[in-house]
Length: 382
Image (cartoon, rainbow, N blue to C red; front, side):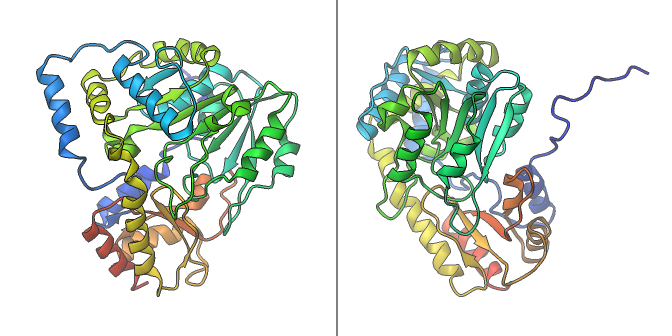
C-alpha cells in the first residue's frame, strides 16, 4: 500500500457552516447559520447579466478584471472614503472575498512569518496562514463587548511579524472599529514593515448612524494595506463569488503574481453587470437602513426571550448569549436548537482556535420577513 504524505492541514475538517447547514436540512430547520440572503437580487442587476451574456461577453476577462468595473470600484472607494486607487494598477477583481484573502496571504506570508489575528475570526484566516508556513498570534476578543486591548496586541508584535489581519465590521461579533482603535493600530505599525490585510466585506452594513472607518482613510495605513471587499454581500449575490482587492501598486504587483496562477480571471458577464449597476450609488447606499430594519425586527422579536442580545453594530449577524437558558457547550446547544426548535445557528467557539465558549451563538438575519417571523416564533419557545 502506498503511504500518503501527511496532510498540510491535518486539523482542518468540514466547516461549521456546512455542518450546521446539513443539520438544518436533515431536520427541516430554518437555516440562520450560513451567511447568505434567502431573497433575490434586484431584477435590474440580473437583467444586466442576461444582456451581457446575450451580447457575447462570455470569454476570459483580463487577469486584473474588466476595466469598467475597476473604475467603478475606484470611484466607490473615493466617494466613500476619499482614498484614491489607480483602477488599472491598484484594483483587482477576485473570485469572492475569500479568494482575495487567500491570495494576499499567499503572496506575502512565508515560513515562520508571524501573523496577528483577532478572534472570533472568520474561519479562512488560520488555515491559509498555516498552509504557507506562517505562525499565528491570536488576540481573543471576549463576550459581551469584544473590545481590543491594544497594549496586549502590541506585545504580540515581534521582529517576525509580517502581517496583521483585521475584520471590520467583525464577523461574527458585529463589532466595528472606532477612531481610537485605528489610532492605536497606527502606533503599532509605525516604523515597521508590517502589512495589514483589512477584510471589509461588510463595509456597507453598519447601523445606528455609525461610520465605517476603512483602512484606506488613513494614509499611514493605506500605504501598507490590502483592502478586501465583496459584491456578494453588497448586492445579495453570494453565489456569484465576486469581490475585489485594492492596494498600493507595489503590493498589488505581488498580489497579482499569485492571483494569475490561482483563478487568473473572474467571470466576464457578472463583472460587466456589476459595473453597470454600480453607476447608481443608491444601489448600495441604502443597505445600512435595509439591514438595520431586519436587525431591529429580529431584536424586537427576541427581546422577551431568555436570550441576551449582544450589540450588533454591523454585518448581518446577531449574536445571542444563552447562559441563562442552558449550561451546555455552544455546539451542543446550537445542535439542540436546530433539532428541537428548528432554527440553525453557528456556535461562537468555532471562531476560536481554543474553542473558547462564552455561551454565544450567531444568527444570520439577511432573510425574508416571513423567515425571520418563523424563526422568532420558534426561538420564543426556548
